[in-house]
Length: 323
Image (cartoon, rainbow, N blue to C red; front, side):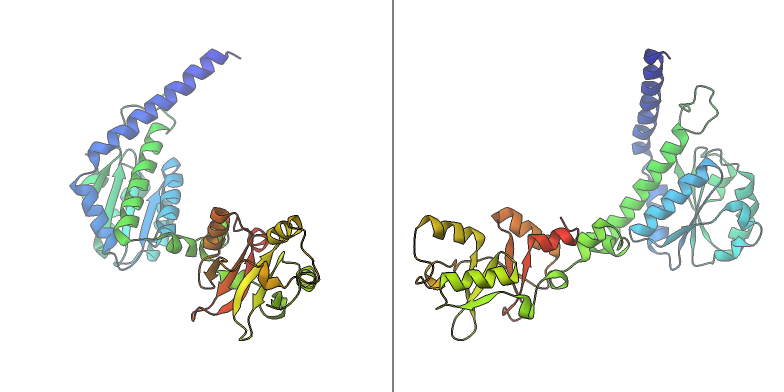
């Protein structure tokens, strides 16, 4: 195994594909704008087609569009000639991917697409091909040469097609004002979805699970309440039931350093009255950031009327995979 030769081949591939991608910048032209306009005004879905390696790229582009605010799916051109063309309506837009622009399976369905009045976007490496000429917008993804030394395996051409597809998807994302929350709705099962969709209300402690004592309670009895509820803190309420402070493990360490009497010191004398709080309607990820920024492990939670309604801890966020 010649490591030098392997490295040379790898670097050559990277450089060729990098050059091809750089050339795409000059092709963001009127056809690109027309393609965006066709998709933004589409009342149906974007149908992405391709054969072979272009089919794999088409699948990925369809998935990217679908997850970023543009309803899309992949249709195999060969299957389209055998019934699947029925998936395409005159309300849809078709993106047909073919490096040569002469893919027989795609050419075979062009007359049907035209007869249906379906808007057609070509993504091709041959801007003079029949596919490009028949399209309402033609995205030029041509390359000077494949990275394959035989000039046979689609390499540089598929990279260029993929990048052009990503450029289209991201332009559409921004044009739609697509947000991180919108993205999370398309990814509810992953960590990103949990981070972006989980609310403080979903994971906070409420009711009897919340530790609480009155202002006159001794530090000793307050510690018993903390131990019973196991949240590493307790809330302190006044005679009206309003939370006026918290007492945490950190406050306990500072109290022990002062050598004061556990039995005779009321909790109001050593509580933290300027505690941090967060709305129950806030994202759990916001609670995580607030805790991290202030180096604390618990937050008081308030409702829409700014009234105390719960407690959330860093451990809760860890269990929910928010952090």
